[in-house]
Amino acid sequence: MSAALDVEELKRSSPDWAGVVVDIMKIEKRLFPKHESLARTFDEELRKKNAGLLYLKVNGEVAGYVMFSWPSSLYASITKLAVKESYQRQGYGEALLRAAVQKCRTRNVHRVQLHVDPCRSPALALYMKLGFHIDSLIERYYSSDRNAYRMYLNLEGSDLTS
Image 1: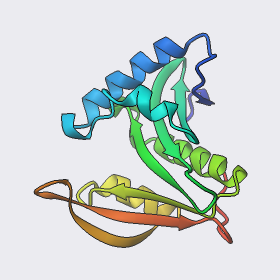
Image 2: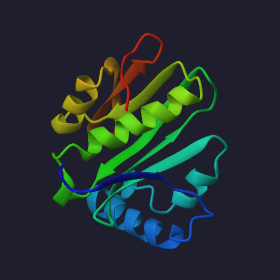
Image 3: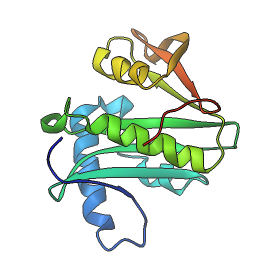
């Protein structure tokens, strides 16, 4: 991760809003099956109260993003974490996740939760590395033949910092 790293919060007032959204949608469509993609509901997701999106630029190019929401101070949900294929396994996913957890921490959230396909071992390893624990297995979460682990990170007492 020697390249210039810049994690930013996506805001509608940003002059590069449209360009960043186009880049994020390209990543979304490339990495996720159509039924898991937020491409069609992206704008709706971001309009939700207490929702946020952080994106990461490497040398001026959008390399990845993390979408999250915090319905209350009790918990926040990471709804999507994605890194462009050419930037995977270089620490960018970890940087995005740490930044999202830190945003949740500043909002006094007690627990961060997420869902992950047990077959996505690099993602699972990242979450466990950062202290997330498996809460339960949810059968047929993604589709009739794809399950998910529900995972959580308690922020009280956690030393995870950005």
